[in-house]
Amino acid sequence: MLMAHAATLAAAAPADAPKGPGLAQMLMPLIIMFAIIYFLVIMPQRKRQKQRLGLLQALKKNDRVVTVGGIHGVITHVREREVVVKVDDNTKLTLNRSGIAHVKRDDAEEQS
Image 1 (cartoon, rainbow, N blue to C red):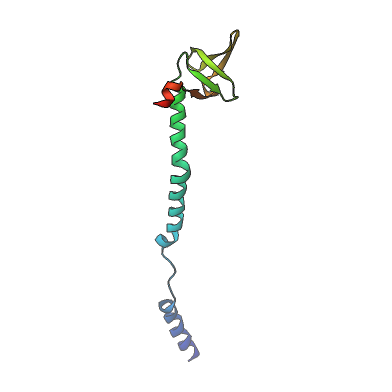
Image 2: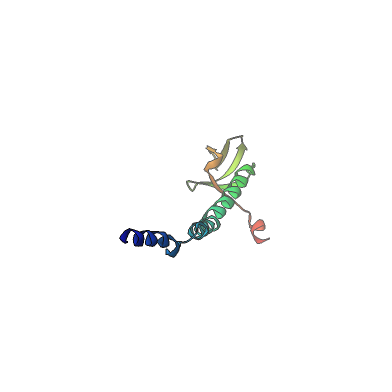
């Protein structure tokens, strides 16, 4: 009799047990967190990277530039991977293109 009662309880237990959250409900917070990180971190970083690459590819002679080290000068020669920057009357530096932080704009270009 005890065995028959245990068998009926064992058979009824799975039907009465509450079901846990589904796979979609468990993954939803992870998907939302990834989307937030993508839009707040990854996407702006890619945009800045494209702008910097465009800046380095557009370097030309007579551009006024500032190097990563803070040196101001004028580009006198542009090569494939290097630029020559004139810092003073008798001082020229050869730098990698990646050493250029930004190009200084003329006053006329800044106002327009």
